[in-house]
Image (cartoon, rainbow, N blue to C red):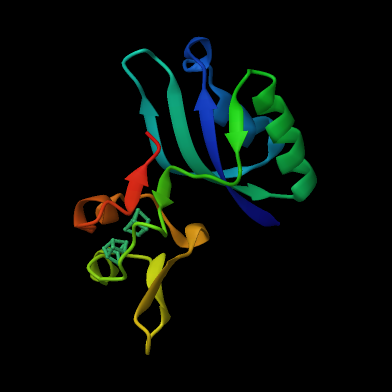
Length: 136
Ligand code: SF4
Ligand code: SF4
């Protein structure tokens, strides 16, 4: 069993289809949704973990793509801009999973470990320098 974190973008016409339900039922996947949004113009965004056999995940993702859903495995809903980060440390106590953490305690260097981020958005309100942002 493996787990993959994915960022899906649904075009307007596909937001009402029960795609996640079918991933569970037909592809034996365990789904953990971190964050979802349907915009005013009815586009959809979804950040989730999928857990299952690698072959089932691959088949499930082919099924998702057949609905013209875009899957981004690299960029997720929360982004950290290393160039904006001043390593002030203000976010560290607000991040519940230590996705934002000290890489080097002596040099007080902060890093962002995307795989640990649960998309709670706490850091957006607690970064004075706008280093953390949301894709949606
Ligand atoms: S969104 Fe939440 S979990 Fe992710 S880095 Fe920001 S504070 Fe941490
Ligand atoms: S609060 Fe912002 S600038 Fe300060 S360490 Fe965290 S991400 Fe970097």
